[in-house]
Image 1 (cartoon, rainbow, N blue to C red):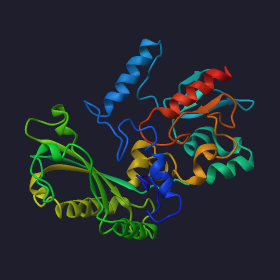
Image 2: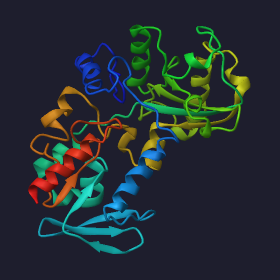
Image 3: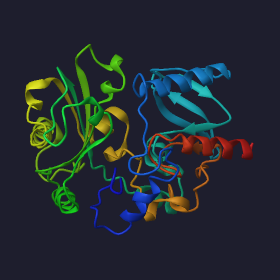
Image 4: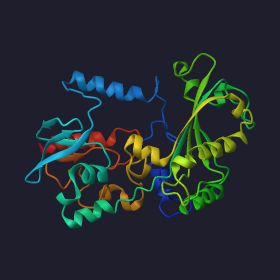
Length: 323
């Protein structure tokens, strides 16, 4: 957890703090204080939307925001990709700070000093993902062939040196030959996520640099998937025979398909220089942006990434207090 979502190796300064920081408030305490969501992560979005509708909110899907409208330096609404404009007294964005302020507001609307701060936010995505549909559970050589041993998080990173070497490759723009893998099999805990007798496996791979030294991610996507499977096969030799389908998500895919700048899963690195009163940047850690009536509520604000709901909760309280 100390290097999750960051282009840093475990020997980098500040990563020990990050290991503790990301466990703060964990319900179960100890390593990997996480919970699986019955029905998949989409159920969180569905539950939130149901609660919002109950409270009187109107939700619109497939309505991409093209621009945040301004009048005398104040946010007054949004313009949608289909040309429609929606007027409002308040705009709240859960996109990352750079995408919000540069793509939707526009750099010319910011003072030069603020523009430099936004441009200086470090993203440096380093995370890839491989999702597998499996015909059966794999057999890991290090554990008995039992479901009870596979229902949590499986980490493939034999040592800190192993992890540091993977980072060494990435910092020069190369894919790691032996990536660190964080694996879960959610269908063990929720049988609805796969057909009877089959399973789905989610693999997070580090480090995969956003900027490649050679080639493009379009060219290297399947090669990355092969490296991940080869690494996994050393610990679960039968994995190749069980794969029915695989999906590889590169850092570039995170940006183009999911709106994560530079593929940063935390909307910006979570280092000492980008935490607490420095998140997203100095002077604007209270969710209010330099644009009046425009707020941020996503992982690019305090306390950062992870599915905690804390940035949105804090932002809502700040907005209510200001109103």
